[in-house]
Image (cartoon, rainbow, N blue to C red):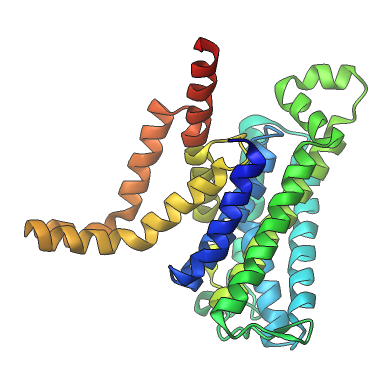
Length: 324
Protein backbone atom coordinates (compact mmCIF):
# COMPACT_ATOMS: atom_id res chain seq x y z
CA UNK A 1 0.00 0.00 0.00
CA UNK A 2 1.51 3.36 -1.04
CA UNK A 3 1.32 6.54 1.01
CA UNK A 4 -1.38 8.18 -1.09
CA UNK A 5 -3.69 5.20 -0.66
CA UNK A 6 -3.05 5.13 3.07
CA UNK A 7 -3.74 8.87 3.37
CA UNK A 8 -6.96 8.49 1.37
CA UNK A 9 -8.17 5.65 3.61
CA UNK A 10 -7.33 7.71 6.69
CA UNK A 11 -9.25 10.64 5.22
CA UNK A 12 -12.34 8.46 4.66
CA UNK A 13 -12.10 7.16 8.24
CA UNK A 14 -11.85 10.73 9.53
CA UNK A 15 -14.94 11.73 7.54
CA UNK A 16 -16.99 8.90 9.05
CA UNK A 17 -15.56 9.16 12.59
CA UNK A 18 -18.07 11.69 14.06
CA UNK A 19 -20.95 9.34 13.25
CA UNK A 20 -19.32 6.65 15.40
CA UNK A 21 -17.49 8.55 18.14
CA UNK A 22 -18.05 11.70 20.22
CA UNK A 23 -17.25 14.70 17.97
CA UNK A 24 -15.80 16.93 20.72
CA UNK A 25 -13.38 14.20 21.80
CA UNK A 26 -12.41 13.57 18.18
CA UNK A 27 -11.76 17.29 17.68
CA UNK A 28 -9.52 17.28 20.74
CA UNK A 29 -7.60 14.39 19.19
CA UNK A 30 -7.14 16.35 15.96
CA UNK A 31 -5.87 19.43 17.81
CA UNK A 32 -3.27 17.48 19.75
CA UNK A 33 -2.27 15.57 16.62
CA UNK A 34 -1.55 18.88 14.87
CA UNK A 35 0.32 20.09 17.95
CA UNK A 36 2.52 16.98 17.94
CA UNK A 37 3.17 17.28 14.19
CA UNK A 38 4.22 20.91 14.67
CA UNK A 39 6.65 19.89 17.40
CA UNK A 40 7.95 17.02 15.26
CA UNK A 41 8.84 19.49 12.50
CA UNK A 42 11.32 21.04 14.92
CA UNK A 43 12.77 18.02 16.70
CA UNK A 44 12.27 15.31 14.08
CA UNK A 45 13.50 17.20 11.01
CA UNK A 46 15.66 20.01 12.45
CA UNK A 47 17.07 18.30 15.52
CA UNK A 48 16.06 21.02 18.01
CA UNK A 49 14.56 19.86 21.32
CA UNK A 50 12.27 22.58 22.65
CA UNK A 51 10.78 22.49 26.14
CA UNK A 52 8.76 25.63 25.44
CA UNK A 53 6.07 24.65 22.95
CA UNK A 54 3.36 24.96 25.59
CA UNK A 55 3.94 28.74 25.41
CA UNK A 56 2.81 28.79 21.77
CA UNK A 57 -0.03 26.34 22.27
CA UNK A 58 -1.49 28.17 25.26
CA UNK A 59 -0.81 31.78 24.25
CA UNK A 60 -2.61 31.31 20.94
CA UNK A 61 -5.55 29.83 22.85
CA UNK A 62 -5.71 32.83 25.16
CA UNK A 63 -5.46 35.36 22.33
CA UNK A 64 -8.11 33.58 20.25
CA UNK A 65 -10.43 33.16 23.24
CA UNK A 66 -10.05 36.83 24.21
CA UNK A 67 -10.70 37.94 20.63
CA UNK A 68 -13.92 35.90 20.51
CA UNK A 69 -15.27 36.37 24.04
CA UNK A 70 -14.27 39.99 24.72
CA UNK A 71 -13.57 41.70 21.40
CA UNK A 72 -16.32 39.88 19.52
CA UNK A 73 -14.17 39.28 16.42
CA UNK A 74 -15.09 36.72 13.75
CA UNK A 75 -13.69 33.21 14.13
CA UNK A 76 -11.29 33.51 11.21
CA UNK A 77 -9.87 36.79 12.54
CA UNK A 78 -9.49 35.32 16.04
CA UNK A 79 -7.60 32.32 14.62
CA UNK A 80 -5.28 34.58 12.64
CA UNK A 81 -4.58 36.68 15.74
CA UNK A 82 -3.84 33.57 17.80
CA UNK A 83 -1.45 32.16 15.20
CA UNK A 84 0.22 35.56 14.78
CA UNK A 85 0.71 35.85 18.55
CA UNK A 86 2.31 32.40 18.78
CA UNK A 87 4.53 33.13 15.77
CA UNK A 88 5.64 36.44 17.35
CA UNK A 89 6.48 34.71 20.64
CA UNK A 90 8.28 32.03 18.65
CA UNK A 91 10.32 34.68 16.85
CA UNK A 92 11.41 36.25 20.14
CA UNK A 93 12.17 32.91 21.79
CA UNK A 94 13.92 31.57 18.73
CA UNK A 95 16.08 34.66 18.33
CA UNK A 96 17.26 34.30 21.93
CA UNK A 97 17.74 30.53 21.92
CA UNK A 98 18.74 29.56 18.39
CA UNK A 99 22.47 30.22 18.81
CA UNK A 100 22.64 27.51 21.45
CA UNK A 101 22.23 23.79 20.92
CA UNK A 102 21.51 20.64 22.87
CA UNK A 103 20.56 20.94 26.51
CA UNK A 104 21.33 24.68 26.54
CA UNK A 105 18.76 25.33 23.80
CA UNK A 106 16.19 23.19 25.64
CA UNK A 107 16.74 24.99 28.95
CA UNK A 108 16.51 28.46 27.36
CA UNK A 109 13.19 27.58 25.72
CA UNK A 110 11.93 26.17 29.02
CA UNK A 111 12.91 29.33 30.92
CA UNK A 112 11.27 31.61 28.35
CA UNK A 113 8.13 29.45 28.31
CA UNK A 114 7.91 29.73 32.10
CA UNK A 115 7.98 33.51 31.71
CA UNK A 116 4.95 33.20 29.41
CA UNK A 117 3.27 30.98 32.00
CA UNK A 118 3.76 33.50 34.83
CA UNK A 119 2.57 36.32 32.54
CA UNK A 120 -0.63 34.33 31.90
CA UNK A 121 -0.96 33.63 35.62
CA UNK A 122 -0.79 37.33 36.56
CA UNK A 123 -2.50 38.98 33.60
CA UNK A 124 -6.11 40.15 34.16
CA UNK A 125 -6.85 39.31 30.52
CA UNK A 126 -6.40 35.60 31.17
CA UNK A 127 -8.31 35.59 34.49
CA UNK A 128 -5.39 33.81 36.17
CA UNK A 129 -6.19 30.47 37.76
CA UNK A 130 -9.88 30.76 36.85
CA UNK A 131 -9.04 30.64 33.16
CA UNK A 132 -10.83 32.18 30.22
CA UNK A 133 -14.39 30.84 30.23
CA UNK A 134 -17.39 31.10 27.93
CA UNK A 135 -15.58 31.39 24.60
CA UNK A 136 -18.26 31.40 21.86
CA UNK A 137 -17.83 29.36 18.70
CA UNK A 138 -19.41 31.98 16.46
CA UNK A 139 -19.78 31.60 12.71
CA UNK A 140 -17.12 30.99 10.07
CA UNK A 141 -17.02 33.64 7.32
CA UNK A 142 -20.36 34.84 8.67
CA UNK A 143 -22.11 31.87 7.03
CA UNK A 144 -21.17 28.57 8.70
CA UNK A 145 -22.67 28.21 12.18
CA UNK A 146 -20.14 26.43 14.40
CA UNK A 147 -22.52 25.78 17.30
CA UNK A 148 -23.14 22.31 15.87
CA UNK A 149 -20.49 19.78 16.97
CA UNK A 150 -20.72 17.99 13.64
CA UNK A 151 -20.17 21.16 11.61
CA UNK A 152 -17.29 22.26 13.81
CA UNK A 153 -15.70 18.81 13.52
CA UNK A 154 -15.35 19.10 9.77
CA UNK A 155 -13.93 22.62 10.11
CA UNK A 156 -11.36 21.35 12.63
CA UNK A 157 -10.61 18.40 10.33
CA UNK A 158 -9.97 20.80 7.45
CA UNK A 159 -7.64 22.90 9.66
CA UNK A 160 -5.74 19.79 10.80
CA UNK A 161 -5.38 18.50 7.23
CA UNK A 162 -4.19 21.92 6.02
CA UNK A 163 -1.60 22.08 8.81
CA UNK A 164 -0.42 18.54 8.12
CA UNK A 165 -0.20 19.24 4.37
CA UNK A 166 1.90 22.33 5.07
CA UNK A 167 4.29 20.25 7.19
CA UNK A 168 4.55 17.57 4.48
CA UNK A 169 5.22 20.20 1.82
CA UNK A 170 7.82 21.89 4.02
CA UNK A 171 9.68 18.66 4.76
CA UNK A 172 9.83 17.66 1.08
CA UNK A 173 10.82 21.11 -0.17
CA UNK A 174 14.42 22.30 -0.70
CA UNK A 175 14.05 24.16 2.61
CA UNK A 176 13.16 20.89 4.33
CA UNK A 177 16.17 19.16 2.80
CA UNK A 178 18.41 21.83 4.29
CA UNK A 179 16.78 21.28 7.68
CA UNK A 180 17.54 17.56 7.42
CA UNK A 181 21.13 18.36 6.50
CA UNK A 182 21.42 20.61 9.56
CA UNK A 183 20.09 17.83 11.77
CA UNK A 184 22.44 15.21 10.33
CA UNK A 185 25.62 17.28 10.13
CA UNK A 186 25.43 20.96 11.01
CA UNK A 187 29.16 21.76 10.43
CA UNK A 188 28.92 20.37 6.91
CA UNK A 189 25.79 22.45 6.21
CA UNK A 190 27.74 25.52 7.35
CA UNK A 191 30.68 24.57 5.13
CA UNK A 192 28.31 24.37 2.14
CA UNK A 193 27.42 28.03 2.69
CA UNK A 194 24.01 27.76 4.36
CA UNK A 195 23.06 30.29 7.03
CA UNK A 196 22.19 27.62 9.59
CA UNK A 197 20.85 29.98 12.25
CA UNK A 198 18.47 31.56 9.75
CA UNK A 199 17.08 28.20 8.67
CA UNK A 200 16.66 27.04 12.26
CA UNK A 201 14.91 30.27 13.20
CA UNK A 202 12.43 29.97 10.32
CA UNK A 203 11.73 26.35 11.29
CA UNK A 204 11.24 27.39 14.92
CA UNK A 205 8.77 30.15 14.02
CA UNK A 206 6.86 27.87 11.63
CA UNK A 207 6.62 25.19 14.30
CA UNK A 208 5.45 27.79 16.83
CA UNK A 209 2.77 29.10 14.44
CA UNK A 210 1.40 25.61 13.77
CA UNK A 211 1.41 24.81 17.50
CA UNK A 212 -0.51 28.06 18.01
CA UNK A 213 -3.02 27.03 15.35
CA UNK A 214 -3.63 23.81 17.27
CA UNK A 215 -4.06 25.67 20.56
CA UNK A 216 -6.38 28.29 19.07
CA UNK A 217 -8.55 25.61 17.49
CA UNK A 218 -8.73 23.69 20.78
CA UNK A 219 -10.00 26.81 22.57
CA UNK A 220 -12.81 27.20 20.05
CA UNK A 221 -13.72 23.53 20.39
CA UNK A 222 -13.83 23.40 24.20
CA UNK A 223 -14.98 26.98 24.82
CA UNK A 224 -12.37 27.78 27.47
CA UNK A 225 -8.64 28.22 28.01
CA UNK A 226 -6.72 27.49 31.23
CA UNK A 227 -3.19 27.64 32.59
CA UNK A 228 -2.77 23.93 31.86
CA UNK A 229 -2.04 24.70 28.22
CA UNK A 230 0.86 27.06 29.02
CA UNK A 231 2.36 24.96 31.83
CA UNK A 232 5.67 23.17 31.23
CA UNK A 233 3.92 19.80 31.62
CA UNK A 234 2.16 20.44 28.31
CA UNK A 235 5.57 20.75 26.65
CA UNK A 236 6.51 17.43 28.23
CA UNK A 237 3.28 15.88 27.00
CA UNK A 238 3.90 16.82 23.37
CA UNK A 239 7.45 15.45 23.63
CA UNK A 240 5.96 12.18 24.91
CA UNK A 241 3.48 12.07 22.02
CA UNK A 242 6.21 12.58 19.44
CA UNK A 243 8.69 10.10 20.89
CA UNK A 244 6.08 7.38 21.45
CA UNK A 245 4.65 7.72 17.94
CA UNK A 246 7.97 8.05 16.13
CA UNK A 247 10.17 11.11 15.90
CA UNK A 248 11.09 12.10 12.35
CA UNK A 249 8.12 10.30 10.78
CA UNK A 250 5.06 11.91 9.26
CA UNK A 251 2.29 9.95 10.96
CA UNK A 252 4.17 8.94 14.12
CA UNK A 253 3.23 12.07 16.12
CA UNK A 254 -0.43 11.59 15.12
CA UNK A 255 -0.40 8.00 16.43
CA UNK A 256 1.39 9.12 19.58
CA UNK A 257 -1.07 11.97 20.19
CA UNK A 258 -4.05 9.66 19.74
CA UNK A 259 -2.56 7.09 22.12
CA UNK A 260 -1.72 9.58 24.89
CA UNK A 261 -5.01 11.51 24.69
CA UNK A 262 -7.09 8.33 24.62
CA UNK A 263 -5.21 7.05 27.67
CA UNK A 264 -5.77 10.30 29.54
CA UNK A 265 -9.48 10.36 28.79
CA UNK A 266 -10.48 6.70 28.70
CA UNK A 267 -8.23 5.13 31.33
CA UNK A 268 -10.80 5.81 34.04
CA UNK A 269 -13.52 4.02 32.06
CA UNK A 270 -11.19 1.06 31.50
CA UNK A 271 -10.41 0.93 35.22
CA UNK A 272 -14.10 0.92 36.14
CA UNK A 273 -14.74 -1.89 33.66
CA UNK A 274 -11.86 -3.99 35.06
CA UNK A 275 -13.02 -3.30 38.63
CA UNK A 276 -16.51 -4.63 37.81
CA UNK A 277 -15.12 -7.70 36.06
CA UNK A 278 -12.40 -8.63 38.55
CA UNK A 279 -13.94 -7.18 41.75
CA UNK A 280 -10.59 -5.54 42.50
CA UNK A 281 -11.22 -2.05 43.86
CA UNK A 282 -7.77 -0.79 42.85
CA UNK A 283 -8.76 -0.75 39.19
CA UNK A 284 -11.45 1.86 39.93
CA UNK A 285 -8.69 4.38 40.74
CA UNK A 286 -6.73 3.59 37.58
CA UNK A 287 -7.87 6.83 35.93
CA UNK A 288 -6.13 8.81 38.67
CA UNK A 289 -2.85 7.07 37.82
CA UNK A 290 -2.72 8.13 34.18
CA UNK A 291 0.68 9.76 34.75
CA UNK A 292 2.10 6.46 35.92
CA UNK A 293 0.69 4.60 32.91
CA UNK A 294 1.94 7.14 30.36
CA UNK A 295 5.30 7.18 32.14
CA UNK A 296 5.56 3.40 31.85
CA UNK A 297 4.69 3.61 28.14
CA UNK A 298 7.39 6.25 27.68
CA UNK A 299 9.98 4.09 29.45
CA UNK A 300 8.98 1.04 27.39
CA UNK A 301 9.27 2.99 24.14
CA UNK A 302 12.67 4.38 25.10
CA UNK A 303 14.01 0.93 26.04
CA UNK A 304 12.28 -1.26 23.45
CA UNK A 305 11.13 1.01 20.61
CA UNK A 306 13.89 3.56 20.16
CA UNK A 307 12.38 4.78 16.89
CA UNK A 308 8.83 5.00 18.26
CA UNK A 309 5.85 2.90 17.16
CA UNK A 310 5.79 4.02 13.51
CA UNK A 311 9.56 4.13 13.25
CA UNK A 312 9.92 0.52 14.45
CA UNK A 313 7.19 -0.68 12.09
CA UNK A 314 8.91 1.07 9.17
CA UNK A 315 12.27 -0.43 10.15
CA UNK A 316 10.80 -3.94 10.36
CA UNK A 317 9.08 -3.51 6.99
CA UNK A 318 12.35 -2.32 5.42
CA UNK A 319 14.25 -5.27 6.90
CA UNK A 320 11.64 -7.71 5.62
CA UNK A 321 11.85 -6.13 2.16
CA UNK A 322 15.64 -6.51 2.12
CA UNK A 323 15.41 -10.15 3.11
CA UNK A 324 12.83 -10.78 0.38
